[in-house]
Image (cartoon, rainbow, N blue to C red; front, side, top):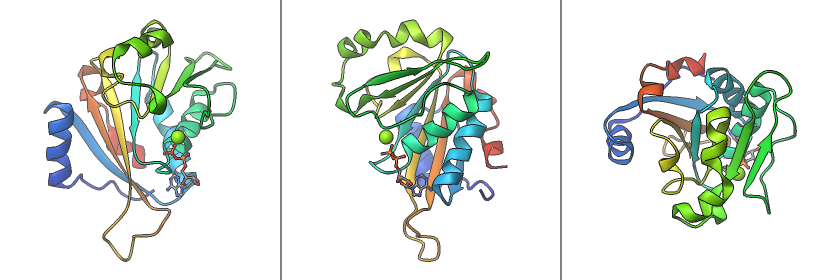
Length: 186
Ligand SMILES: Nc1ncnc2c1ncn2[C@@H]1O[C@H](COP(=O)(O)OP(=O)(O)O)[C@@H](O)[C@H]1O
Ligand SMILES: [Mg+2]
């Protein structure tokens, strides 16, 4: 991983539009799936029960790869995979940490009805919940959320390699106000 990049002003404005002005943001560049996984392992050390992490990015961006690292960092049972038929999978802790609930909301309609069937509100206080494709669907679970927006790097001929990803982190709410998100690059 290299030094954190500051989110471009346009990105910051978009983030403020999307998440409201009270966001703590940082930008990181990852050069391989291994680095993305390592980011997940590092992020896991910041997480505690009750945390909601939302992953945004196109198919193949690396959301599940990052979640795999999170599972390793949290020390949970079971390999994190892209669920084909399962919407939410619970990975129980191997040690003292919280379970990881991994949600792929892709096939989930908007609205809380379907979400309520998953009982995520019941799980959240004791778990770390990571949601792929959760925008507009799971925000009501918590006022405090960490968003990770993953983009393929584009526009820079030198760095526009297929494996390069830019990750913008945006912490919403008190929980994330003082988190040192840029330190995840170290
Ligand atoms: N820097 C990178 N970070 C994450 N994945 C990468 C990266 N470079 C290449 N890849 C590849 O992109 C794919 C990402 O897949 P996946 O994590 O399932 O994405 P998503 O869950 O966002 O659809 C994997 O095949 C992975 O090996
Ligand atoms: Mg996925």
